[in-house]
Image (tube, rainbow, N blue to C red):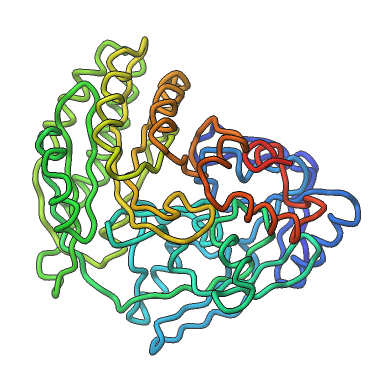
Length: 438
């Protein structure tokens, strides 16, 4: 059955920077319910946006008509351990999926740093982790089931509806409602994590070697300093160095969330203190090594609210981008309270993936909630766009369809599939009209 909610049903994202009221909230219990809801909307000239966990900073999930939530959608869960394939409802969260896989001795090859997103939301926006040998999470999709704007149910893979498969793995929800996803997994594995402070110049000077010798590597630059925190995760044969529970609580809960939240509140109240807070934060993070189950090392709690912009850049453009970013930060009329994150991914062949056709370096800029950010983000976007950057679909940016068409070689092909699958634009919204066109 398709459930509904009052006409003023409010929704806001995790950061609180996107909110709105839907005319109805649809909670399908089965794929048939999804099909009926889509056909009803098409017949009445209505629109549907699917909302996941609200971890996008853009208005990609914001509905100006009907909002669909997939938390009650039931499809069969299938785990094929021998072939390392899992089929799950698209509304399942990554956290739940990780637990399911672990119980069967499997894991996703890579993850981002949070696991609150739904499977559909994560792949639709190009969510990624870090690692020179890994593309975004959408590259793990082996097949998917999609309800199109005409109510047709399509099963898509590299062999079945391959053009839709190439478009739908990163689609912003513009092609239909994902109801089921099949993911290719790997045997469960342990990661050895090594986190250490370093000088930014040293990291950039040895960047190719640093990226090349680790399975997964990233670093955080602390504004107003020359310091970074490097995080490298590599596969380990044994979980022989687990992080003591007290150390995990101290570092990842108390320091990274509670103390950091307090520091951000102080910096917001007294902006002049921000450079000193950043310097103290950079020095407070010490070296540590530990092992753990892969998803528990990849994913950490994030309770300090912020807004974010992230750009995928050709990897060779990273030093120039960071040099410009440091100048931008120093010249702003306000202070930046959250570190800059840098990650790396491999090229893929997904039409609207940020990594289409090239290896990427990702630069993510953040600002604590309640602080000004638009001049900061706009200045960095100008630099990133000039370097061939592509904005993360789930994070703030100011690009429109015309400029994005220049950044994605298969943009017109995506539009052709969209015209075929959603001719009446059941799945459009003001945001999608801006970034994809009408």
